Structure formats: structure tokens, C-alpha cells
Image (cartoon, rainbow, N blue to C red; front, side, top):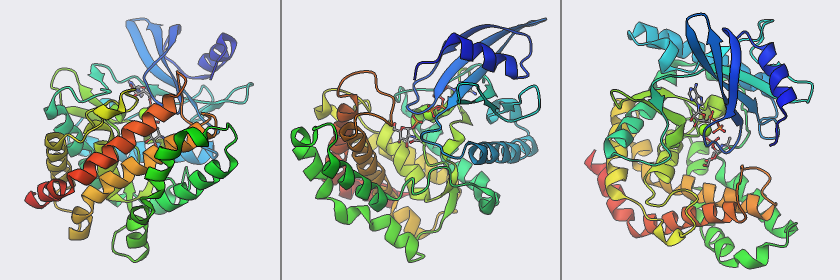
Length: 367
Ligand code: ADP
Ligand code: GN1
Ligand code: MG
């Protein structure tokens, strides 16, 4: 979304920043919010912040969303301090407005928040070193365990039915029927690939309904660029993008990381034939995640981890195609056919997982 300097000036003036803002530039590669890095000049140097316009088309209840984030980050700060960590770097920290609010509503009708910028750390858009992916698995597993004691009833469901795959399928069918951009005819193969897997789509939700999989407090968007690694130690430092923390399934947090990080193709690689599962990366992430969960997953959850990976990939491919059919209104895109390319890398990965299913199950059994 285009944002005018006038609005940025108004917003920057509203927050209790240390010093005078000297720059404010677009930042990161998220698909949902508009993110800026702000540098302020202070008496003893510089202080940086992350400024975000929250996407209120996607998140309808901004007050509920911010209440989740302040509640969860306060809880995490306490746990991190108890463990002798650094709460300013190991979790997100919101910066209030000058009148003490957690977010600011601009005259343009947008909703803004500010976080302390986490210095000396980076987000990766691809796995460079398998050790980082192991770190990421451990950190997301551990994160889920830290939140095990969080009072789930205090959480707002920021996007209802977020990983309810059958619900997503219904939205997909509607988009095909409506076909508002006249694109359905040109993507028949992709549509058929998805519809052929309807039976799988019910697997996890049916087990949840039957009480075979427990509902936990989960992150729900565990892709690699939602975790920051310390530049010096290389260790996972801080889990970010807390907008979708909600009750969910552990296998989905596992699965979404695999979907993004263990695909040999980038999520939006135009040559989708490159989309393949890296079994070594699947293996190393599984090791990290299970260690991070510290033995707390049930036998059924462990058994369903490969299915979590397949479901998250299939669901995400279906969501990208839904958005393509609807005219690219949900995910940020920067080129024609961007969502279609993304859909194809997901479906390519699903097909490859099906070929290597026995090996995926073998890896989980090994641990
Ligand atoms: P989106 O929901 O759009 O994905 P994110 O909250 O993930 O937005 O932020 C987008 C990017 O901004 C991240 O991938 C990361 O690179 C960067 N980022 C977010 N929060 C911080 C922070 N506190 N410190 C440093 N970088 C951050
Ligand atoms: C979005 O916000 P970001 O870029 O981390 C999306 C995820 C998708 C992901 C695909 C709130 O994540 O569900 O899996 O894109 N977030 C939301 O890359 O829809
Ligand atoms: Mg993100």
C-alpha cells in the first residue's frame, strides 16, 4: 500500500520515541503489514525502531490483536528474565504512543505500532546453513513450550479459521466459481491438483474435533523470516511476527517452517520445477523442533508431523491460488503472476513430499 510522507510524519510524532526521527524507510519482506525502519538521533547516538502499519483488511480486530501482543510479550519478558536472558532482544517490545496507548490510529484510518529494533540480528529468506534451520526448529519448539502456560482464553482469535484447511477449501471453491478476474480457465491443472487432495485437507481438523490432537497456543506463521538470528553467535534470538498467535495445532507450526525453509525453491521461484523437499533439512528441523518441545508432544502429534508439513504446504498453495483468482488482494505482490508462481512452488513441494512420504515418516520415527 502506498503511504504518504504526511501520514508517516503524523505517526512518528505520535509515538514516544527517544530523540528526533532522521530516517524512515521500507523494510523486510513480509507479505501482510507495511514495515519501516526508523532511525532516531539521540544525545548519545542513534536508536532504531520498527514501525508497522498493521493490515486491518486482514486483521479486523486491531485492539484484540494488540492486546494479544502486549500480553504475550509481557509474559515472554518474564520467562526470559527468569532464564537469565535479555528481554530487550529476545522478544518483541512495543513502544507506546505519547499518551500511553499500544497503537495509534492515523487520520488516514490506518493503525500503527512501533517495536524496539532488534540490533545485531538478522532474518533470513532462505536457509544458508543447515545449522540455522536447526536453531529455528529448536526456537519454535521451545516457543510453543514457553506459551504452554499462557492463558489461552485471554487470546483473541485474530484471524478466525486461520489454519482450518477445509474452511480455506470452501473459500477456494467460491473464488473458482466467482472467477472475478477470468483467470480460472488458465489454471485448471493447479485447481485440479488441489481438489484431488480434498481428503487430506480434513485430516488434522477431524483429529482435533475427535480430541486426538490437542489445541495449544501456537505461533501459526513459523516461516524462516519470522525469526531473528544473532549475527555473532548465529543462534536463534527472537521470534517475531506475533500477529497470529492463537490456539492452534503444534503440527502446523512444524509444518509451516518445513513448507518455507525445506523447499529447495524460494517461495516465489518462477521455475517451479525446482520445488523439492530437502530431506536433510526436514531431518535437521525435526531434530531441533522435537528437542525444543522437550518431550512434551504426544505420540499422535509426533506421528502427524509429516502430515502437518504437507497440509501447511497444500493450504498455502491453495491460499496463493485463491488470491490469484481474486485479483491479488491479500498477499503483497510485486509482479504479474506473483501469487501463481508462489502457488506452483507450494504444489511442487506437495508432489515431492508425496514421493518421499516413507522417508519423512522414517525421519520422525528415528527421533
Ligand atoms: P509481516 O507480517 O508483514 O511479515 P513482520 O512482523 O514479519 O511483518 O516484519 C517484517 C520484517 O521486518 C521481518 O521479516 C524482519 O525482517 C523485520 N522486523 C520485524 N520486527 C523487527 C524488529 N523488532 N527488529 C528488527 N527487524 C524486525
Ligand atoms: C504471510 O506475514 P507473513 O509474510 O509472515 C501469511 C502466512 C503465509 C505466508 C506465506 C497473516 O506471512 O499465513 O503462510 O505469508 N500471514 C498471514 O509466505 O496471512
Ligand atoms: Mg513476517
